[in-house]
Image (cartoon, rainbow, N blue to C red; front, side):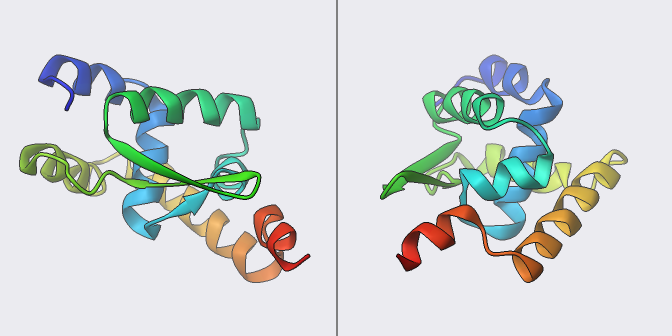
Length: 119
């Protein structure tokens, strides 16, 4: 598990906070869902997820060519509490926009990972 200093250093980047909020709100998500929700290139999102994975904030599983991420199931209680509190923070507008974008994308267009799994 990550130290306090490492955890807050990771949270200092807005993209990582946005990723954590989406995973907190939606559970497990594919990288393609996360890139679409944030409007960022896959390489950028994957790099931030790798940092969070190394700190054991997120867990991953691979299915075919896609990697699915979720909040790590064994987070320390204080870490989980901080993540939950972030959803209620004044900057939560950005997280709300990301969540609405993801919901719209999932409702109206199949994710690239979903299309791959139907073949």
